[in-house]
Length: 611
Image (cartoon, rainbow, N blue to C red):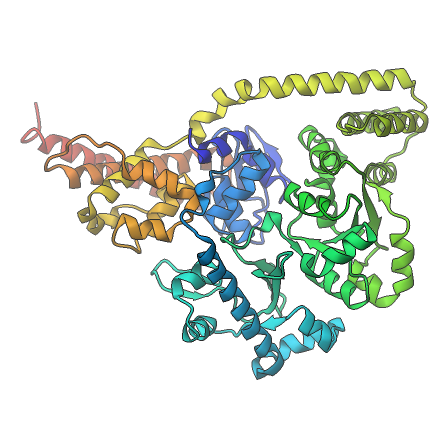
C-alpha cells in the first residue's frame, strides 16, 4: 500500500469536512450548504461509502478528501497530503525533499530574504502601497515595529517580484521552489502574492522561511500563507519565535496567540514571550519546539471566535457540545495528549466578549496583565464552558457531562491530576466517586479495544473505494510511456480522475514534454506514485496503442457519468423537475454515445456486423 493509500484508509472524509461545515444526514449520505459559494438550499453532498463529495449547485465539481482540502484551504496537493498524514499519524517518506542539499536550501532562504526586503521597500516607498500603509496606521504599528517585523507590500502585478529577483541573480526555478511563484496550467510562472500586506515568517534562527499575506479589502480568505516548501512547514512553524525565544526561556512561559497581528501588537507593547500558531489547532511539532524553551504554555483565546476553540481542541466545538462521539474522542487527542507530551498543564486565558488579544492590549494593557495572571487549565476551561451551556438540575445533562469528560480524564497520564479531576467532577455532580472511577476505567478499556479492532473493522468497508484506481493508472501509464499519445489528450478531462494524485499528474503532464520535466512540476510527495505508474508493466500492444488509450479514456468517462448519475439520484438535489430531467437526459445521451462507439468498434473488429 502506498503512503497516499494509507492516509486515505485512515482518514474519514466526513470527519474532515465536518470541521468546516455542519453536515446533516440525508439517507446514507450527508449534506450541507456548499462551503464554496452562497446558497439557500444545500447542494453539497458527502458520500461516506465512496469517500467523496460533490456540489450539485454552482460549483458543479467534487472529488476526494484531498480535493476538498485543496479547494477549501487554497493549498496544493502536497500540503493537503501532509496535513492529512499528520492527522492520520502516517509518516511520509523522507524523499519528500529528494536531492536537496544544504547549499541549495540556503538559496531558498536567500530568495525569501530578498523578497522580504523588496516587499518592505515597497511598503515604505511605493504609491501603490498607500492602502497598506493606512491599514498599518489603523493598527497603530510604529515605524520601529514595521522595521522589526519587516512588514511589506506586494504589488498587484503578475511578475513584479519575479523580475526583481531574477535581475538580482536568483533563478526562476529557485524562486518557484521557495514558494514565491506559482505555476499555471500553461506552464508559466507568476508572483504568488499580489496586492497584499506581506508578513515575513522566520524560524528560530531568524531566516525567512515563508510569508503570510493579508488582503486589503473584504475578500476571503483574509490571510494566505506560503505553500509547503523546503524551508516552510506550516505545521511546525510558530510566528514570532525568532523574537520571542529568549523571553520565553527567561519568563519560563510561552503565550500562544492566533494571529500575526496579535503577536506584533503584543511585542510592540513589551509582551515579547508571545508567538502565533499557524493553523486552527496547535500541533505536536509546535509543542516540541516550545518544550525546548518552557513547559508552561498559555493560550490567549478570543471568546467568541470558533477558531479559538478549534485551536484548543482541534475540532468543531459545537459538535463537542452536541455530543458527537467522534469529536468527544478527539478532545483528549488535541488537548490532553499535548499536555502529556509537554508533561505539564496547558492553560487558557479568555478575552472579554468581542475582543481579541490585539484589542485588549491596545485598549488597556492593565486588563491584559490581569487576565494573563489568572489562566485556567484546559480541562477547567472546557468544563466551565460546558457548565455554562447545561442545567445540572436535569439528570440528562449530568449524563452529558459524564460522557464527555470520561474520555478526557481517561486521557490524562499524570495520575495525580487525573485523580484531582475525578474528585472535582464527582463533587460537582454529586456522583459516587467509585462509580465515576469505574466509568473512566471502562472507557479506557473500551478505547483500547476500539483501537485494536478499528483497522479490521473499517478496512473492508471503504478500502476498495479509496485504494488505487487501476483504470486511471493504466491510462496515465499509456500516456507517460508513449509520448505520441499526447495528441489525444482531448479524450480525457481532469474530472474523470477520482483520485487527486492522478488528477495532479494528468494536469501537470499537459504542460510538459517528458517524465523528467513532469517530476520537476509536481510535489515531491507524489514522486513515489508517479514512479510506480511510469514503470508500470504494460503488455505488448503492437499497433493498438492509440486505440487502447481511447478505450481507456472512454471507460473513465463512462465511469464518471455513471457515478455522477448515481450521486445525483442519491442526493435528491433541489433543482426543479425540468432542470433535473435535462441533466439526466444529457448524462443518458452521453452514455448512449459511448456505448454506440464501443459497439461500432466491436463490430468493425469482426469485419462487419455478425449475424
